[in-house]
Image (cartoon, rainbow, N blue to C red):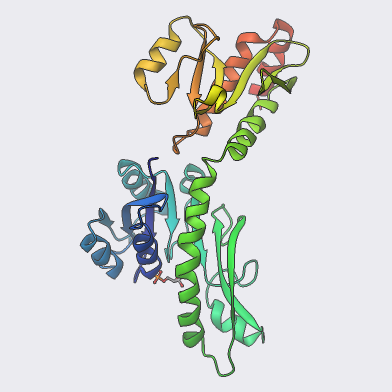
Length: 316
Ligand code: GAR
């Protein structure tokens, strides 16, 4: 199975990046690092990554508008083929465009037990508050700073006499372990059948008058009392494939798609030429594209009176 491609953004030392990179050397690690980029060309982490044979990019953000600088980083990540982004001590606020471009595919590590102590000086604040434990969190990045669903945390006991530095040093050990483990879990969830089915289900059931039944042993989505527009297949007849089957919009579209990306698209057995299978188990599924395909499949089978509903939905 191919490894998930991860781009890492750093600002300085890059010890979390190094932890991710060393973990990725294990043969069974489900991700690989395809780029390390920094907003400081002299970030020590870049030298470390380059010595390990990883592509690097460093450019100062100084004097640039936030969105313009983020667009440069975004282009570097996409050119490198990154499918996920891991922020590892990247000390820059991100533009909304950048965040939405990597929605649900960008993680951050933060040195506190979120939701406590967002922002800076986390160690000092935990000590000042008299907390028994500080720690670290890995979370999905959303528009709000240090917000977004927490995927994993490690509590670290605060010792008598701890200073922010002594506490930070111990938390860093926990960070290095937590980040690679959480990232590995995160990139593999996109290959788990139940997670994939839920994504398809969410998109399919959001369409007007859609419902779900089981047909030929497959979860299947159709219009209430009407025709089916999508099937979810998981190892059907032992083929080992996880895919969604949708109706195409034109007779030769199936052939065109299969030719454009033979690994992803296939002709589903027993479905004829106007359906196409789209594999979901390749680890780089474009969910916007799946949404578009489900929608156009719905349009192929929807009765005229329902098409109006879709037109209304389009206006919002
Ligand atoms: C880490 O402790 C990380 O959690 C923190 O910066 C340090 C970077 O160290 N990140 C934040 O505070 C983000 N809000 P590193 O460069 O050695 O990984």
